[in-house]
Image (tube, rainbow, N blue to C red; front, side):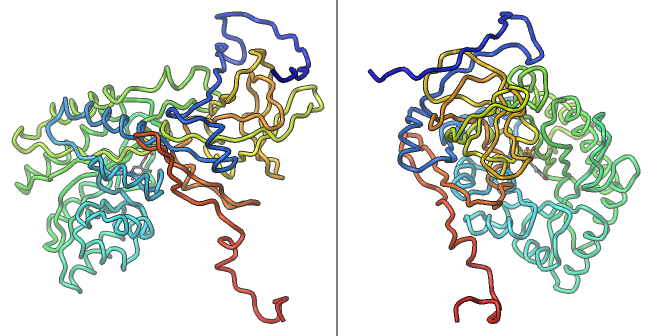
Length: 451
Ligand SMILES: *Cc1c(COP(=O)(O)O)cnc(C)c1O
């Protein structure tokens, strides 16, 4: 047995069960393994820091959401939100589970095609589609979700000039009782723009209206907002049916379901406060079933859920670099994971678990990343055990947005691994090198040191 290392004693008032300014005290459990694989082995083999994804958690979560909706409604289709995580291996798991692709740029569109997704199974969203991208999507039979009138006219123009037909839906924004309103994307319901666009599409022989789309926000805690949104889209669908005798084939409810992460500063944990898939499903399906849409014309419900499907499946493992005392005596712990790798630290209080057992004594601590930059704070204040240089930890629920919004800032990005269903570990994105970063740079002759 090795010699115990001295740990500075601290005095902390314990008030079991009573919420303090830090919330209800929670035990910080050690986390030696992810999906049955030792974190120490992962770091020894792939370095620190390291992104780790669990295929098992992704597939289980997909099963959960599919069950919640399909027990309540006959036709449901998932579409994977590429911007939430577009690592190829992650997308392919979702495609194997039956998801189409939901993309918001020409880059993401091409990535989905490269992943083998058929054009007719791609939903093309976003406010900035170019005319080349619109033409490609129309030729491929993709679903083009129109964001504004300029796009509607541009697409109509392309289709007339090139003699193409496009499958279209409109994105609708509306008052769902959540403020500030998300009205910058799509056409507004209340001011009549959405209805106007639908009429123009119905009168245009080159545009085939196939659906209605909304995406009411992200990390939406209110299931009632979804109920309101679904009933407004159902209302539009029945108006179109009444006036044109035309039946749309889908209502796309977008994404936005909350993951179990806790928002920064929230008093209660996200685990206790976010609605379940069943609650979201109940709100959406009942609004559509109870609408004026005829039972034999019920549209497919499409879901573009991102965050709630992948957040729990991703972790970042890392190591402590140093500890110090701040001027007010508080402890600061510096770790090798910065906000460049954990962009979501800006709005979540991410949970951090030591890999090994600890004394159980916790102290108010600020956790800083390794960047030489004042904004690099993972947790401004939390009750945390004393970890020493070299000690390892796991940050959980990091799977959404961090591998797309990560920053190549100050340093390069580390390896990403996937633990498969039989606990095999696969490297799915190699750590970047200096070469990767400079390969697109060009230096004019007169500035080049290579003479
Ligand atoms: C970002 C986005 C999604 C996914 O949102 P989540 O909050 O991650 O579920 C779905 N649809 C559209 C149009 C989006 O922009």
